[in-house]
Amino acid sequence: MAKGRPRDPRRAKSRSTGHRPQTGGGPPAVLPPKPPDITQHAPPDGMQAVASGVWALILDDMAALRTLREVDLPLVRAYCEAAQVHADASDLLNRHGLLVEGANGPQPNPMIKVAKDAAVTMRQISDVLGLNPLARIRGNLMEAATGSMVLDIQKRLRELMAE
Image (cartoon, rainbow, N blue to C red; front, side, top):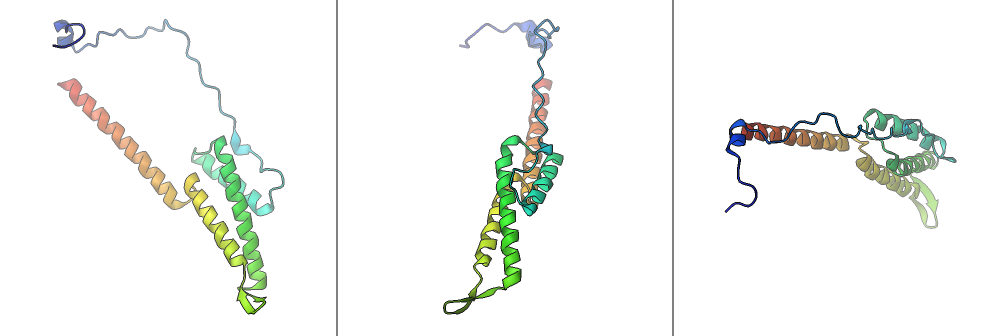
């Protein structure tokens, strides 16, 4: 035995839900506040030259892709600082070479590890922010899958409505 109100046979024939369309008698729509323009956000105070340049590039790129949010700025800063560390370590490597004099003779320059660690940090953060090609491909695939799911749902609804 079904629960609820018995089916109205007139509704079943007309495929009507029984709901009346809105006529605009409700309260006026309230638009959400416009988000602040963070694309013009200046680099944090004390940020060095390489990091400041990377900051501007990332903000421009993410703003163009419409993926930039204010909550991402600390991650952007971390990426920029890692880029600065990588640049400084690479500069020291170029000046002093891959091998430096150690207590027991020539040894690998410690800046190799510093540059490598900074590059790993940059790669990890770029994955999160969608700054590298693979992250962009993954993002596009997710967007396409979501769009495909929406189209599939619409198709199923049309089929159900046609029955």
